[in-house]
Length: 523
Ligand code: MSP
Image (cartoon, rainbow, N blue to C red):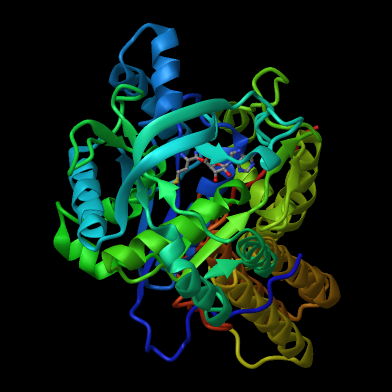
């Protein structure tokens, strides 16, 4: 799947150096699995990337705690919904912490400032005249928390996602005039090339709206049907539909009512990562609500694909709901993060396989990267008393390697900015391969044996300078390893991507740190 190289940010300094990134908020009816970890890891990768470039970043994730699904789960557990979600939230926080995910806020839709924000914003929509009362008759999947029409169903009765029977509902509700925003939405898709990515998903939306039109959407539930939700501010007998409540987390999460300054600074979102199953809500209902309430729209909604595990759907009953914490215990956070970024083309569906994870760990992390760092530090220790050697000038091979490193670094940035993170992480491996090839070609050990200290010094100094670049580029993907490499280079902090140079990163005489094996091979 291709979605074209679309520059997200210019380098002209016109764009404010802020970056607001979100993940969907997860239903805490089950602990997170590797599918939910995937989005959150990618958001963390992008967060660290932009931070390292000097952007002020806000990364929001959290949990979606209202709605019928949660209410039913709590009921069957014999506790109140709030008690139930309180028990579940730590599973998410622990998983994200195990994976070294550092969000700026973990929003819960039961947070008081969120509830206040939602009420204020839906009131704006109401005051705009975009809400009216009506009767809803139709089919609803509680698992998806969404409506279906009969033609969407499998065998005329099952939800196409969960393959469970949908419910027939008939009730008084309030509708949002989504249909009013049809033309504005179509204009947005057509004129704003990066609003929905990948491109194919946008084309799908356009076709769907052209074929089926846009119907108004029911955005409340009467309390007799469901009381676990945010009360509708203009009618106390209703609660707001869980998706309206949930989408507005992206507004409240910045502190719309509790930290106005933060909100003003970061709004609108730069990248909103979602799974492809929730594209309709994010690319249709969400911008329409924002248009109605008078907010600036997000820059990019990126819908990634779905993960399977060993070719099977992720599900508890199939035993494929792998716990990210178990994986981290077994392989370490960096290997899991690296694998997720490296193995699955971002945007496409992909299969999670532990066998492949081990292969990438051994071949790329241990062999290419780990061995390289160990090898160069061993030579620096042996020949130069563990200091960066003094050297001048560059040989033709040095120049050639330098331009190869530069090329890979430029590609790395292009891919990162265009959300082709699987290509970006491969550029990191390519930089390591380039340095390894350089050492094999120049053979510093032979130069040393021949008594050519000057050439040996130049090679080792270059290799160290490029390992410095490696540490900076690895940081978003594998922060623990980037920290270790930086320590082994004798640095107090991880090099920033905004500061790396192609040569001269480390000064002659600089004391290197203690070398250590970065990755043990897994047999
Ligand atoms: N609560 C809503 C989102 C509201 S956002 C305003 C929801 N929650 S969810 O827990 O069901 O899903 C959250 C995200 O996880 C979605 O983006 C979904 O696509 C993603 N994934 C769930 N299973 C997944 C895979 N097997 N693979 C990849 N992503 C997966 O929807």
